[in-house]
Length: 339
Image (cartoon, rainbow, N blue to C red):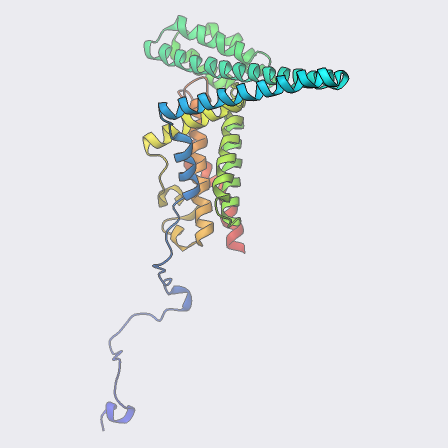
């Protein structure tokens, strides 16, 4: 009697199959075709909103509407005060004093915003002057740049040591690139470290909020507010001291640069330093979105450092986005894996 007669029909012939038996841990994950890959929708929306330029017609519309509303409010307030003074003089004078105080506060806010915009323009002009001095290897122009940079940070204790070292050694340098490189190393190194910490904190915050808050548009609002706050803090670190209008102007400049260069794009290589190849698709939808949004925030932060920095990155290398992602987001991945 043959083996098939003794043991019944053979369904799968395993003779000659040397494939080792695999355990449950070796089985590849079941594909989830209905689960879209994380795209960083929150940061993509933020970049689109911040970089979008309104048309000339729309700007005229809002400017005229604001003027009309301001005129109507002013006329109504004036009539209200004059009528109140005529009927109840004491109360009318009290309301007049409140309106005058409010007007003074508005004027102070306008002056502060103009001062902030002027300081941002000063930093931008210094950056362009440094580029020109380096391009032409102009030692005289480089000395003027270092003098302006020292004056910019004259009242800051965190740059006192660097200013003293630069003052003691700058006469020993006789080429433009060496002088500006020394200024970059002595004055901007601690500021670069502080700006990088702000970028890491913002990336971590955006990733956490996106992963943990499932509300619609909440991740967009959190990403927008975190990125504006991060850009404002970076500007303050480098001496910009941007106000409300200045912060929005910087945000638009940074986002427009990223959109123009195609840097606001999602790829597995962005998270490879902390996840490894192909792991992004195995994460949950919300957690994957959080990591991608955090990584895109790191890209925005590095671009903001380049825009707000009074000197270009020459002597020091530009901060690595991959390294910032590794530092800021690795803890989130580990804590998730432990859970």
